[in-house]
Length: 277
Image (cartoon, rainbow, N blue to C red; front, side, top):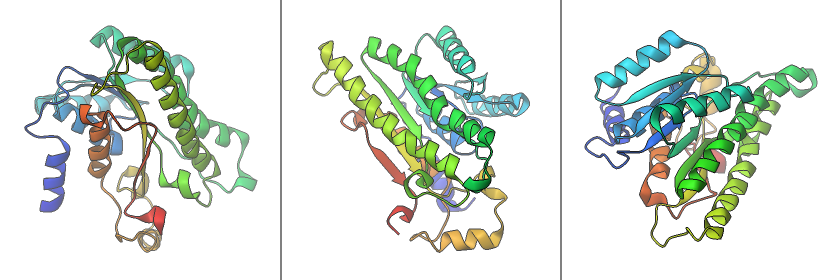
């Protein structure tokens, strides 16, 4: 890691800041890549973070131990967000263990790339179940809880692919684009519910729902892309590089802080300018 990247990572963790102390955050897909960076950023600001993961329990426990060694409070929770029963169980586990959920980050996502004319129904449905329906099923019980409490933060992690489309990713693009409509609808419904209960306060923390749309980020998901393909991708990015997970985490962290209370229903592109190219 370069000196600039180390500085960026330190900034992302909110070193020296404890603004989220006393808050409980649930991050799906939270033990690797962008999710792990988000967990680190939120826990670094004092939040207790429940990191969801799908299958690798050994890796999840190692990740938990590493962050605990840095003085952070993290729990791990196994579940497939593509299954309704798993989403409800994970939410119940976090509520039972921590008593509240102040922040939800829907980061879990999968790919099953194939041209649309060759795509099987199972490949289409599996990606939508995790990337779109999974976010809905996580949001539903958590949003009820947040409305009751009168405050909260939900951040959905979409993709520049949802904004632009991408060859061989009709399922992924459709799911990630669907998060935009879900975000804006839930943002309106949350504000309406608080207004109806006379709980919209001037200068209050509020209850906000936003989306972050990363571009191409250096993670395990992009590590297997051939170098020639990566070079061609970089030519489409005005900043001529892939992003770092910490750069996404920094934006998510900001949207989870109290100071972001006047931002809701928005799509935050973090893509090196790719969207405007």
